[in-house]
Length: 506
Image (tube, rainbow, N blue to C red; front, side):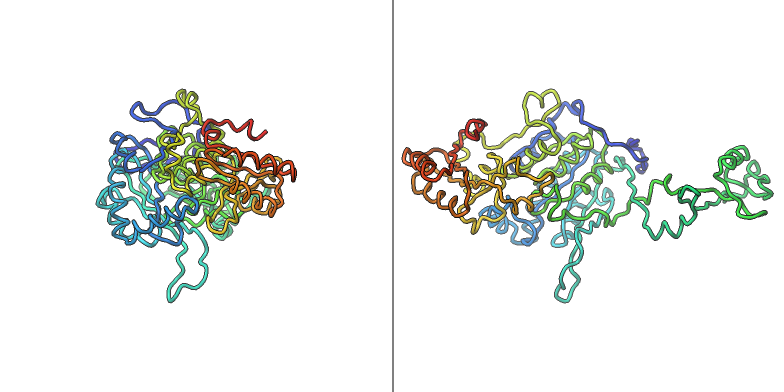
């Protein structure tokens, strides 16, 4: 059961069960369950004051080593590096966005900023200025990996920092617990019942000696007790009080399985990073574990509260919010990221991207994505390539250099293992190559090159995506099938926009 914000400090809550689903509309001022594609600064300025319960952001770190924008879009990566060539430029980029985030945060809300060591100290100073030093709650240290290699005359960096602020003195806080350490359990819960239940013996005497109403003799021992005599006798009858020897002070059995665990501190070492073969891994460079976001959301929000991620990436915060029965809003500047988000919400949360369902609180929608051929023609080439592969239902390449004429791959559902992660797919033998050209009309030379790719890779089926095809190109596709029995399926951008793939995949 969650506690409401109080006039004083937040009150810890007991363990609670997450809501099974989101229901109702929490606010008449803004839409939720929406993915916005575009600059978050522009979108945030459209939101009303004090409308968000919980904000989590994992913005691009001021680090070239661990942030690759848009799944390998090298042109966008270069522009990002140029824009954030120094810590000062990075802070200048983040400051107006954090000002807007502080504005939309409720006074009872919470704000989490996830960063690493490159600029964390400068970020902390900026956040103190914007959110107020008095609203700083704690600095969370998340151990994201084990130390690897030997840093030159230093210690390897293996943690991230998450700065936690509140909107004011009254804020939602649901105490979280973690299991006790095995060594602690062995030392402090060394007693066992015949059925194996572990327990420790706790003191029953009252530290306040000035309690005459609680002073009495029990099992031959006179003390000032914590409980009344009637309660003591009932507990004794149930076998909860033991006396190790005659004349010894009775003590209370405190069972391990009845304890909530150890209160969660500010150093989190129990949530590992996403492993290479984890089923949740999408290949997004800075993807965070779902458990990490679930912990933050459980700790600082209640069912049906609104969660905002303004650097939504691959939708981990939104999936966690949906699973825990919260409303959510996601913003990202990358169309590719937004399509990946939508696909993940459909596949993992089993909710539909449907305007009609969204209007009655059952689906979700995406706003700002390219919706016309004209918009897609203006898209950066690699971004267009990623969009086309994902829209076709394929998997994009992790690198854009040396792709050997293959822009993506489709893995037929019948060939997939039960729990296939992105890395596992790379070792599968059954897959179909995808070639994407941002051309008004693909000609025969392009088809000839793709035929060579299919023959080299020994693929029976391949997919080609473009705006349109010349008559010669279509004739060559037909001739290639008659010569070899191998099939190239030409798909137009119009097909992808209109969802008219069924006939193309047949």
